[in-house]
Image 1 (cartoon, rainbow, N blue to C red):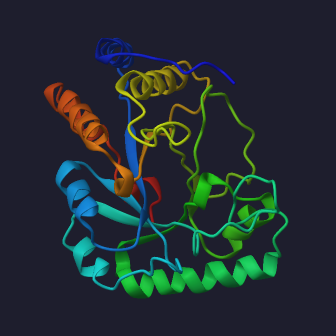
Image 2 (image 1 turned 90 degrees about the horizontal axis):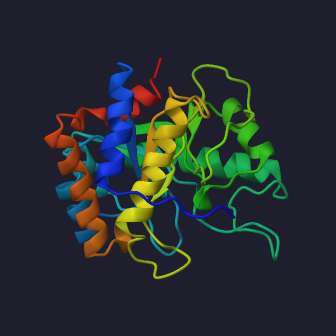
Length: 267
């Protein structure tokens, strides 16, 4: 495994200036996972986020059922749009395999029925702010289920690109309007403290991905994604998200965060 890149705010400024020297604009987007209800943590996310946000909502979690009150709450939050975060966020992978709700070993007919029912329920509960985009739990989906998304009317998928950032062969034909737009900067240290990963690693991944885009190593037209999980944020995580927005605002660049509706436009 490659060593984690590290950077500070000065390194981010240098990378940002290289983009601007080429008369190009860096772009970002923000995805937050695991919402099902209005909670103090979701209130804090709404307070902190001053930019467009994609909220990945679990439609049918058994232990945390989707609450109807989330619909009116989100409709009063002008800059948020909803992505479908799997079905029930349940692991269907074989014993010993990495967790996945949609592994290649799961019956495709079962996946199709589950996704269809969950998508309908999500739209009925939350309304028009739901985009036809799947965010698979644990950022994993087998090739058969991925191909199924096209037939079911999904416009895209969002997973996670781990460092080092390299060009990838598309798993699906590049057929509009379907797009895969992933995140690259996970602010939570899942394998360690389960708190904030730290400013230097988070900025390191951010600078590294922006650099890879600028140099054409990865698709420069796809935005760099910030991944958060509001329910587990500690104070340091919230502070970093505020500091990143403050840094961009001081440079007049807060508008680089992309609206999910522009990333996955409806016909």
